Image (cartoon, rainbow, N blue to C red; front, side, top):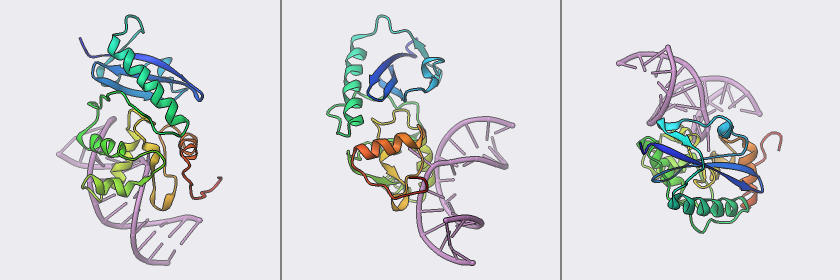
Amino acid sequence: MKNQFVELSLATRDGQFSARYSEKGLAELDFPNAKAFVAPKRSRGGRAVKTYGIPAPIRAWHRTTKAALNRILAGRAARNVPPFDLSGGTEFQQAVWRELRKISSGKTRSYGDIAQAIGKPKAVRAVGGACGANPIPVLIPCHRVLAAHRKIGGFGGGLDWKRRLLAREGIPLRNQGGL
DNA sequence: AGCCAGTCTCGGA
DNA sequence: TCCGAGACTGGCT
């Protein structure tokens, strides 16, 4: 069965991320401390496999992923990204994720902007849901989506990560509570 | 600043 | 199939 995922770790200055690849490309990326490595998620019925005998294309994608991730963590734009396998998402979610990829480093959009861009101006709240379901955070820059008036909004990986990523890209935030 | 209704998607019962 | 819960917004108090 080709429904397997290759899971590889990614050491960065911010800890060990973990990436999962299908035969089509990078399918998921997890922040450090996600329990992924202890008990791999069986997403989409796929089966996590050990890192033995990894196909050459996946090794190449992984190198690309690593370089891209490290650049973004340093607040710079990624030069190249691996192919993404977003087939696990609904049409709506994929439309949102496609739109997120258009936000360049150092820029931000609001949930309302994204909703409008995909032709569903009133689906602002649903856009938030799709952002939260983003399987490849950082590379698909969900952290660059803010609520109206530059409020931080939320973040699946934890707000600290969102603030950190934004700060490194030089994006100012409006004060909110304990900041 | 806080509360509330409107709006749209998604996943579980 | 129905229903409740969201990483939202804009308006009102």
